[in-house]
Length: 149
Image (cartoon, rainbow, N blue to C red; front, top):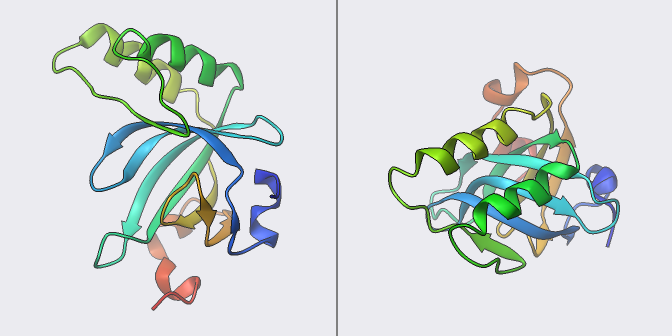
């Protein structure tokens, strides 16, 4: 298993992300934060595309301060106990206090630094590339870019 910093050099490799907090879910993870098992880096992730079967998903990664992960765990434990490797939070409607505290953490994210392709972020990374320009994120056909069509 490679560190998250090496993902662009190791397509079709085991995922280094051993703890994932899923904040948005639809037939799989859509958004949340995750942590690298090797270097402990923490990232916010957001799904930007998926295939027609909703199996292969394209995600953006934005680095967060390392303490963000533990802070979010303490917030989410007010709702339920952690379940690893992927903890899908069962959000309670209208819990404004938890929503605001969670959003404060997500707002600390740096600009997007990487695009990753996966069917399950805790098991395998199909491909990854560094992001050099924010414009490329929405202008690129990622399935063609990663030869997935």
